[in-house]
Image (cartoon, rainbow, N blue to C red; front, top):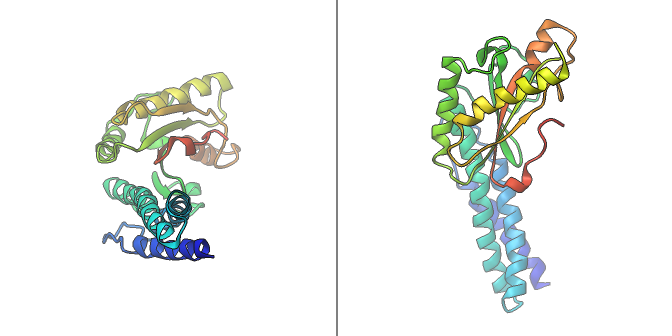
Length: 235
């Protein structure tokens, strides 16, 4: 009974703590979903650990819950903060609309997810046709992200390249990996990013028109707080 009450109190405290974070700014997403989730999860885990390793009383559970909330909330806030800072540096806002990827006018889309921040770069502003060399303006944008990552040494970075279905699969697989590696080489400030070439796997739209094929040609960067939460970007 004491444990249940302690977990509840810790979770409430976690949500209160997460609500204290606020960054003003026009391009900022203030929903802070990851902060709230991290704090609540940390609170529950901390309460259980505190109860089991302490004196099996409500006080131990509450203290453990508050510590867990602080740690969990810090991880979530870091992801929220990174999303806002990356968006600001790239001259855009955080856009979590799943339909944004279907709008060809969006050359860069920064979105927040429960476990990571994703940056999508359209191919047309990144590389010349059949090339894996970053164009100067694209290189400058990726370098801005790299400079921001220096403030987050614990962030784990993943980079994936995607093509349309023009040409052989083998050619596109190599091209997508080379393009991803060109971006990853600039982002190697916290260690070597995980690089994946996806060819035409996981298309945004059917490869049945020039417009749709252009949507599918892209490089995506993923910023994770925990390597164990990384998933295969090609699936």
